[in-house]
Length: 157
Image 1 (spheres, rainbow, N blue to C red):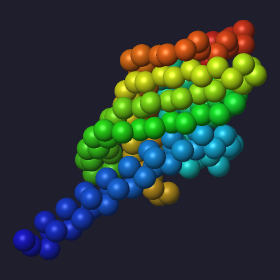
Image 2 (image 1 turned 120 degrees about the vertical axis):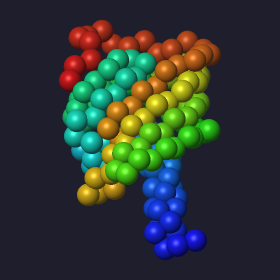
Image 3 (image 1 turned 180 degrees about the vertical axis):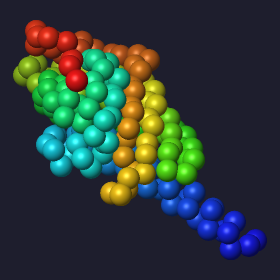
């Protein structure tokens, strides 16, 4: 095997490992509950688009507000991602997988709401590493009563 082929394979494996780590850290961060500008920059491009069960937002600042408000509906959560299929093409990549999310409602009831679905993510390599440029979560099923969202305008961004 020549050096160029070996370098390409090494880059492919390194990219897959970095993307897998980013996606795992993202799900873990949802459970840790610290949503600030540093959190948003660590995972997303400035012009990220996110299609989530509670709406679609455009831009890192809008996503930060959106995720913070959504996660405030829960006292505790555990997010699991699995079956990741990561494909790279130079400085762009896709990551598709499954997500299981368990939530304890913040309303004091102790009720548990579970959702499961599929994620599709588009990533780009930046000077700071891989970042999510587009993400979507399509829910396949739920169990339990979802939290009541506060009344207000639809997601902006």
